[in-house]
Length: 139
Image (tube, rainbow, N blue to C red; front, side):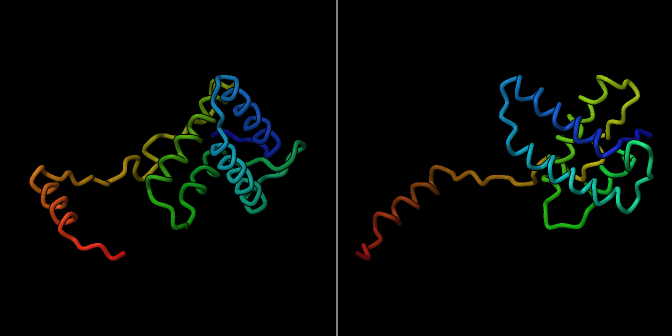
């Protein structure tokens, strides 16, 4: 199990964002999400962290699992996107630590939207256009 301090997490997030931006990606939205994750990790550490010389140490797997399962009104697709970003952060960390933790993609409840668009037929489009043309102007 990969353990990390809050200071180490903050350093890794900052380094990860600098790396992504050096590749030409702005990562503004990702930065906000990672800052939110860091605040969550601080609260998680206050509840479950073990004190060490370097500060509170937490399980990276534990905090990610708690983050993904927190009660909210967000959709499963959003949780999948959050997991994707955290996986990228963990893969980045693994470059330094070959035994570093990376969550499985299966941790997210759903990664694709169930939305299926409705495609109008030519006849239906003709009906809509005819109805719009026949409608009297209100103005």
